[in-house]
Length: 557
Image (cartoon, rainbow, N blue to C red):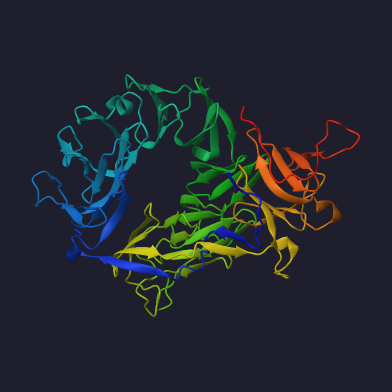
């Protein structure tokens, strides 16, 4: 909670940054001359110690902020890479690094003793394509044939235990593992093309989850609720599994496609992503089908992934080049396709990248190229090219990876620019005027300021109003004496000159005023408040002693 008590603020300042104003930054280039293993970097992660690790085209590089240390197969007997071009990195919950190389081999690196272990089963090198690390320390490695391997590290011996679960394929007829999920109790669930299996956490015994019929069902996605799981299946079917009981069919979404992902959007809305038919948004009894047939600006219906940003916009990574955005509030799609210096669409062999930094800047690299940041006000992608070229997006420039470290620095690896660290020199203050027509207005003189548990901003003004903003500093409205949040000015928004705002541990709000006593606001389900007003009453000996309250004290329970 944040509160500002007992003094006058002429103007209201918020620590924030405008995403459209990032012109001030410093650039540091890192090359092999600085100790980097190779100028092209496929992946960057920052470990729990703050060290940065780079998956380069010539080994693994570690950066402590001052110098690089490299791990290559020919430079150190401890390094056992069969191929020094590294594709991706993952850190598990024990602090081990998992390394996927260009030849589909995987290695575990122990930073404490700088040793590598190759993940091999049956004496042969595996063909791995993805690494997934879970909070329990378990790591699953997906193979290019659709199968997967479970790996666990013993912290005492530092050895690996590897389980292929051959009977999953031989006894149960499974050909492909679609997804592995670890629930809140750390139990693992394996979703396959022939049923779903739970992994007993101690004995590591697989058990097929029983269904309410005998069909062979493929499962692709899962989401955990308080008392059950919802699972996405083939041909739009959704299944439900109460914890500790059998699966049963729940309902069918109107599609022949497979439901490959399920996302929660807010508290009561769900998004069902399909592999070939766009996605569905379900809120209560209402379902919106976002597909090319219903939204012509959508380039295709094959969804690879979704990203929901901090403002609720849904970013869609398609099988085609570019990237799309669905605004659920406006119910409209915007398709962004970046063009090069010749006016042709960028179609480099690079995937989509979407992430937000701590300053709420949304960074986007559409599939095919065009690293940018999003201008929310104008709904457009702004080129971000540190070379300051005449053409901000070029046909021969590929972005291999981009990330933000915990210090807020942007790391960018491109074909033309190599590896760069960009340090932004932000002005942390933004002036927000509550009355744009009269800078000297009483509405711009702030008496109280409070951020509640929902990140709403409460503002008490000399104009005797309480104004509420959402977490993005957009105006929600005025608090009326009846407890409703109203949009327009009217007589009953004159609460009094509020000098202190506080929310107690039961969620109740208390407003103390200069000259109008104390207000108690009990939140209601409709978004308003039940209001109780306490003030001085000469005929009531139990009333407040006076109406001048600049602060309050609530004892701890």
